[in-house]
Amino acid sequence: MKFIHNAIYFVLILRYVNLFVICDDSPSPREAQTASLVNNKLYFFGGRDINNNPTNEVWYLDLSSPFNVSMLPWHKDQGLPLAINYASSCVSPIDNSVFIIDVSRPFITNTSDAFYPSEIYEFDPNASYWKVPTITDYNSSFNTRYSVEAVIDNDGKFFIFGGSNSNGSNTTLIRYNEMHMLDTTTGTMKWTTLNISQNVPLPRIIYAAVLLPTDEIIYIGGVDMSLSDNLRLVDIKAVQLFNTKSFTWSTKQTTGAGIDSRFGFTAVLTRNGSIIIYGGEAMNYTSYKQVSPDLAVLNINTWEWSIPNISQKNAPPSSLVFHSATLYENYMIVSFGLILSISRLSELFYILDIRNYTWVTATTINNLGPLEPTPISTVLEFRVHLHLH
View 1 (cartoon, helix red, strand yellow):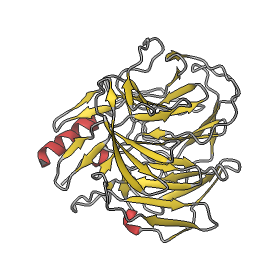
View 2 (cartoon, one colour; view 1 turned 90 degrees about the vertical axis):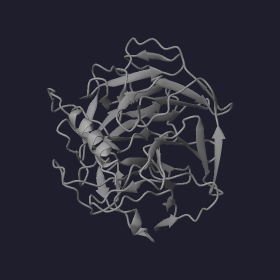
View 3 (tube, helix red, strand yellow; view 1 turned 135 degrees about the vertical axis):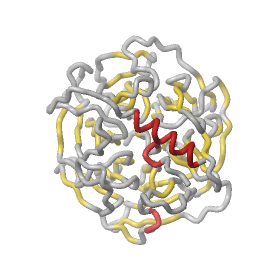
């Protein structure tokens, strides 16, 4: 087992042999950034660059006017206090502040040296100001946990499930299937580790999570971990639902088209009740492989999967992983990531018109009004921590 893990880790290191021309007025190629939509501005925080180093950069695009992917209106904002990668971000429905949950280890800028000053940062996009929020009853066992994704409900409560420890030592790996809640609705932020015993999923990492209109969080795909060393892909047809009001778990068996189980993918919720997943990769104990199809749609009214017939004109390269996907008006914006087939990082943007499932190169803004904070699935860390025991 140790040999297999080391072999996988070696293969992943080889992915980072890349050469790019980098400009100062736009973001360089990267993967594992986290993205948040604040009103009409799409922010990108951190990420991992071609030298395998995390970054503290913050970039944003103003989406309020039509734009073309060949001439993106980039703006650079105040950088993070520390470099991050594979973090998770949520936008507060209370004041539009952005919370960065960086349990995957914050880093000293421009290095791969881990540092642990805080797990959560708060960004004021109006003032371009960063701070570390004060949180009561914080569960210190949450420190150095990785491969989780935070989801915020419409009231301002965060929910964070699963993960594994990330202390960088040779101690036994710890897997988690706890649900943590951070309540930001009061003057003092409060942390709670929920006591749940019924129908709790196995410990899970690198999944996609989206808040549904029913006040449930849907968990799709990823990798689950038994109490042994075994890692396995979660069956993408069996999704888990967590009720944010009753704090209960349930499982929904979906039907429809054949969809490869995967990790390293994204998921967004559309206005008409569909979840679009994109990209990702599959694995066994010796190799990683592309998934099919790249894009699939889950109807949450019928719980049926479908595969749209999409032209590949203007489409992203097949096998894009560890990217971002954001829904804005009638468009799904796919950004950055690793092109698995050629082991190269991307700096490019791709736009899917979800009205007709066509990849386009420019937007036509309809001024539908600011959306509620869009569930944004930015894939999470896995490869760097495959030194399992």
